[in-house]
Image (cartoon, rainbow, N blue to C red; front, side, top):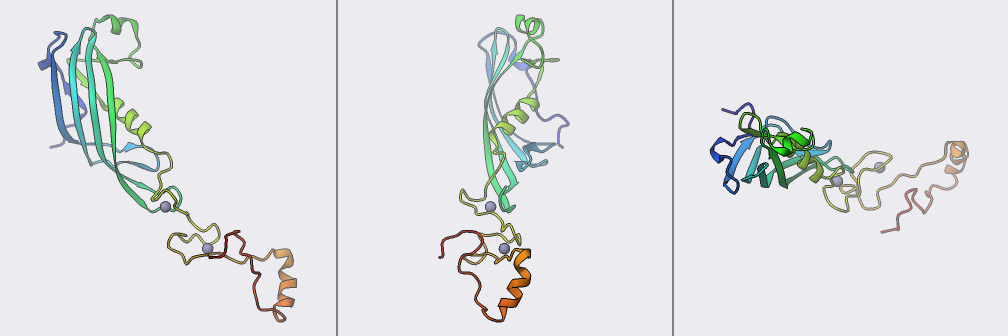
Length: 193
Ligand SMILES: [Zn+2]
Ligand SMILES: [Zn+2]
């Protein structure tokens, strides 16, 4: 069964003696999509936690990695782009009644509540920062043809369209019978192959 709050860790076992530590190696199922608009870890996917929880004087310091497989779309050609993302977390969760808790806001430093810490926001933030806003299927993806929308990577070399300015269209019709050859230079300025 999927826990309702899979990113919540119980730290009761750790105790409050500074220097005590424990490790968390766990694969959980994300109840929500983690990522940015064009790419993310889909809801229902596995997320691997490899974390060290260390009791320090002010709270519990969480360090380690969070990783998962991502699904997205190339921002140029909209082809599916799969990958993985790994983020490094370093996050302090303040003990109740600690000086840190008294002197900071909860949106600056996370809190331990009922001997639990909730990694969800830290993971959402870290994954969103790590993933590219404009993912690409290949670094030199040529994208889509501006005119017909075909994927240029799959189109024939030198794909282009001879576009006649509507103001000249009538004239071109007249000359069409005289000269069937289209202009030598394509409208996209490409070098001839
Ligand atoms: Zn692409
Ligand atoms: Zn085209």
